[in-house]
Image (cartoon, rainbow, N blue to C red; front, top):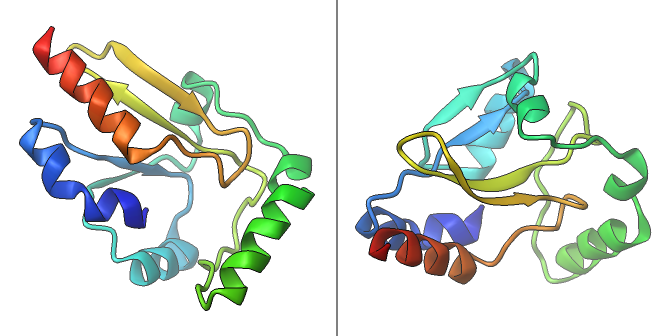
Amino acid sequence: MAQLRSSYDQFKALNTEIVLISFETGYWLRVWLDETAAPFPMLLDPEREAYRAYELERSLRRSWGVKNLWYYARARFKGQHSHKTGGDTAQLGGDFIVDTRGIIRLAHRSHDPTDRPPVAGLLTALKHLSAG
C-alpha cells in the first residue's frame, strides 16, 4: 500500500485511478483505513462477488506459511508494524488493470499476502496501454 501511495501522482499522470476492494466492513475496516491512511476510493464487497469474479483464492496455508511469517518477522525487526486484522486472513488479494471498457489488461492474483507486483511494472504496463 505504501508503494502505491508514494507513486500516486505517477498513476494520476497516466489518467489512472487506484480503487481498493475489500470484503471487510465495520470495525476492522476502520482500523485498517486508520492505520494505512489509504487515499484511494474503496468499494466494499462483503459477499466477495468481485473476489470470485477475479478468481482470487483463499489459502490458510499460504497466508500463514513460513514465507509470510518470515516477512512479518523481518518487518517487525526493522521497526515496521503490520496492520491489524480480525477478518478472514486466508483471503488472498490481487492487483488488476482494467480499462475504461472493463477489459482486464493486467491480472496479478497473489500467491500469498506478500505477493504484489512491483509498482514500476504497473506503471510500465499503464504506459504501454496509453501508448497503444
